[in-house]
Picture (cartoon, rainbow, N blue to C red):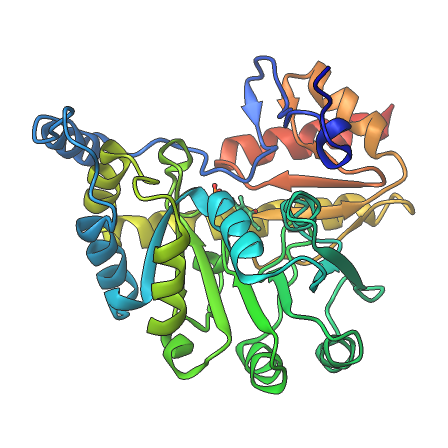
Length: 349
Ligand SMILES: *Cc1c(COP(=O)(O)O)cnc(C)c1O
């Protein structure tokens, strides 16, 4: 009889929140679809796709459009089927059995999840009381534990906190481990290391089209690194990892820089509105602590997280319950007002 091995036996398929809700603030997505001017361009692009042919393995059109948007060298860029694919790829290819990697805690859960499949030992570096990373302590841990790969999100999902560019540079420049900086939310902040990635031998930066670019459906992620690392990523990835439709659509979307940047500003305003509203609620509720955020969501500490989550669902609003914490995505202004109103109602009994 065939038996599943121990490392996969107890795994469960990923289970995002299902059901239909009027307001979805659980996955840090962009609150609105692309406008008609852009979708019309995408429809036209559809006709050019040769469905009988395999996609371009290097996704050249997409990569050039992405590189132009961020003003970087396209040679540094590898496209992935979402950053999710790239996390798995890099942990499995750049580490060997018995190597140690380090994640920060709390942080995006997929980093640790994939390490167990890769049979790599994953250590956790605890963040401080305010949920920030003490970079000097992190550097010490990397040295002391002989860590081969450090991966963390900046800005961080779920905390919404970030380390500055100077701090990130200090980390990358001080360790010989490979540092993977997941900048999934950096379009909402201004502390990216993207423009300096070529000067480091040990840095990979991830970007995604799923959040600020509002294209989660396309599954487009990017790894940006010096040519030596880039070449290795391209060599180990599966050849046709990004399908032709996503390549073609992504190529168009990244040409709309003005539109995307304007929309990102609107989302940042909405996040400020959300944070200020939550802060106001916290003044009357001792067990309710929102953290200031540089991303498109706000993290709140509260022992009532499960109860508030249930109550919001009963009002057809879904946020993310993280056991003692809530993570609330900044939606449209109307959605942000609705979730703030509903939380006030919850506390009013
Ligand atoms: C959402 C998210 C991603 C996922 O990116 P995809 O490109 O959609 O796979 C990666 N990293 C972090 C920290 C995220 O929050």
